Image (cartoon, rainbow, N blue to C red; front, side):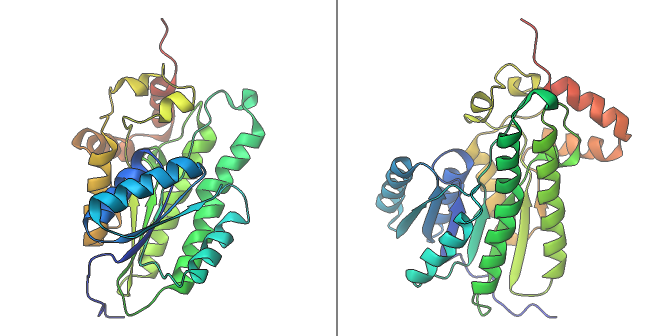
Length: 271
């Protein structure tokens, strides 16, 4: 099918995990491009503060939906609220996520199930709702935030890395399904970022958090890379040249070597 839909700027964007870090940075780039926003996150007070700042700075309309997307009914409520507002998004950024660190037998299964729901089920629900409600005369864009972790197994973070691999596979499959249509699907695969991610996961002392051998970037840098890739209709982007080099090496390395190397960088550094 020939792609006849013009690549217009985004008009109305939904961003999950938008109250801090990469989600907030991505919302900033969308607002700079003139897009109105719907911000989704759990922390209502922080969400409303971010919305006020973005609206005041960029002159766009910003709405908020407080929601815990690891809850199975939350995604449906997001689209119910959008319909009540008569809002049809042309950009969806699936960014919400968290990590659980530790040897698998010692971690909390309940938290890992929440993570699976958030990274996989909620993304599927939101993506389905976006696609079914979209206006096909507009350019529609989906950004799924995965990770460079999608390329390797992850000892000590086994469930997290597996969900990131799922996100990458899902995104690339959708990108091919919708090739030549009104829909672009981009998978953003960052390396480590300067956010609260490591601290919240109890991982401040793992090797990866040190910024070596991977390239640690700011959320704004990663969001800029993801925004540019989205606007160009790229299927996948890995911000940072060292991270790109790592991804190439990961593709070439035998599977056992990938696992051993990842175990080393995800292990705690002895004091």
